[in-house]
Image (cartoon, rainbow, N blue to C red; front, side, top):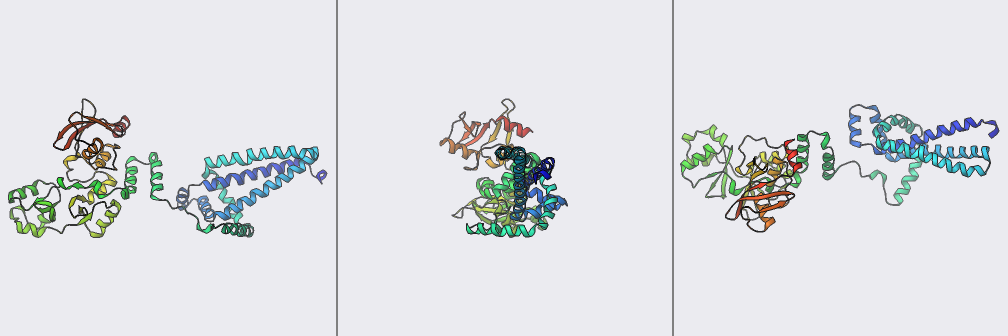
Length: 428
């Protein structure tokens, strides 16, 4: 039979089979390497190739069965053809040499090269291939169905059910990694907002609260002129109202409501107490993502944070929570402990040690540790385990810190030398 068929025809057919083998090998890698979320976006945008590829990947067992059927068919046919060619050219002794040479050719040209190309450019390879595989899957569906019956049966014998795959859902940690790696593709502000949303469950109300000793409010035990002066000069839209101390809180005074009901000239203690709204309490340690939902359900904007003994630890507002996502936006004055000024002589920053560390990191794009004390003063005291003297120095997370002022048992102000890359990020 070999004498009836020209050798050139055999060689041409062998070349065609190698191309088919390269196609099946490369497209298999490309289809399995596709970014499913990018594919879904393209499909929803109307890209026909993406739509077909998404349909094929809905049942990966069928797609793999189709690809392997075609790949094995062309490879075994090509191997048989090599045997025939070797017998014609050199007899039985040439079969071994032909097998070795053919194995190397398949490995290089039909496996490694196309698969590497497909792994580097999966969309460019997979989406056009979907136009071939989709109609082909309809033509050979009985064969694929039969193959999958046996293959899935074997998988069930070892406790694997193909229909119960892991799917493509991402965990919070995986989403965070995805956003982090996409940082160069996103504007810095959007990147920070997305990271802020994803980190809400790791941050608690304790991290962003105004401590109870810094709360500006109305003490009903003060004389009336002092109360009026507090209302006039506070600059906040809501003020806590208490007796003697914040632990004896009565509620919140909404200054807009006060203006609507009366004027300061006509205001009396009785009218003021009538305008006070009931306080809203939340336990310390509440994650911000949960507190955001609770604010919405309770129709509240300000909450008093209490510990296990019922003592008030501080105040958190809806604005504080949203600023964790979008950054500073409120028109209300920031607390004094957020003051940071640049030292023109040294290039360092003079910082009030009562500053909240998370707020300082966000404002200055620094990376001081946030898994311990909430304020810079607390962080320094925890690290040194003593009250430092003026002029003392330490290094926290590669940030050289010099103590500028202490008072009683607290650090009042420090000088911080930010690492060079953080200064560049801040100015950039």
